[in-house]
Length: 277
Image (cartoon, rainbow, N blue to C red; front, side, top):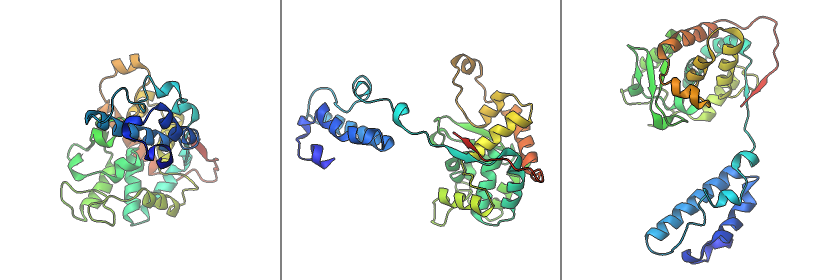
């Protein structure tokens, strides 16, 4: 950034200067470039508020740079996550249960609740109602920014009771890491997958494993599976009619998923790894 605008007075930073920074990064390092653009925009907004520059912000996206740079979706490579074939998930969970590590318990909980890594690792006791068997993830910890209620199966409750027996305060992390007050790392969960013989599967890929199981092995409606994964409905009409979170219906779905995860894999069946988005 320094060669392009480092020596310029803040009032002299224009669209050309911003483009000199962004264009070399935009196609190969789109996420980094997007964050840099946002940071420049914030700095220039601050400078304008302080009276150090005038006019429109040359780093703004909507109505300006969106006409000069291709949309992120057209240049950013989609990151795929290898998913364990759903038929093998039961055997995998049994192997996870053989390990006593904190990361193994967190991974088991993640699989049983179909949650994302950050949601499971950041779970706090204050979010969990053991009596009603519900885990309420606050919106600030969800990808979509909305509160998400997760019905807890008996197997998921067993994991939580195991963790509770270790002793912790209501507001503390359910799965604490090595550093005081810090959750387990994503790397720790990835290592737990390897330790249990995950055959190259990723932590995030278990959400796809669950989705495949729903579609190929159950009669549960698609909208239940999508609600369990906290996916936002793309169909605006469908979303308008489905205002509830289908919690009670999802209880049966998660109980069935837990029961499936308690079964070993089909002996002798080899299924190639699939790629999940």
